[in-house]
Image (cartoon, rainbow, N blue to C red; front, side):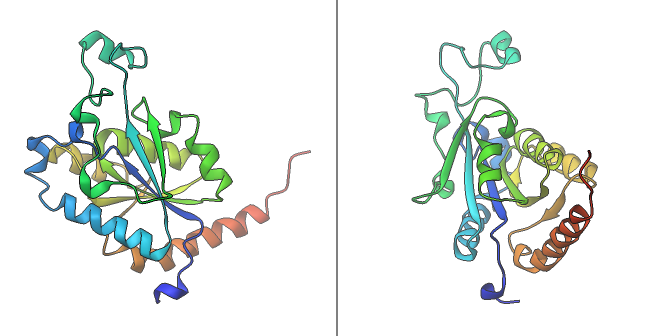
Length: 208
């Protein structure tokens, strides 16, 4: 199937927390291809017409929007005004792409994400970013519980290696797994799943 035969209108990519504070040396040394793969993912999505939505963590220095465990610890990643909040250069948004700021692990706990996806008619979400076992996982599982099919782009996600692999291997019933290279090849499979769901939903009778 060629690019012109693929219609990605109901698909979107959620690129999550690709920021300096989530890219320590301990992770970077185990995922040396991550920067190039994320750059390739963005290039693919833009070329294919897949909507790209960037989710980024941000917290105020005064702790006013910190999650409680972080208040008790007295520290948190991605504090506004610090270098750690900055987006890694290979993951910057293109003009016109949506950027949503979040104060939680799960991107769906922001008030803007779900209404935006509904408004744009999205049904299938690709997810990628940092870190696999926390923000990527929690955002993906909420997506799956909110009426979306999901796939984690595993070579565009990174974490401490054991945590990364354990999460991907443990929840196969929640999300699909894919890679940058495989995304175009999986289009037919995903589109068939969406068509099957549409047919099933059309048979559901509304409750009186």
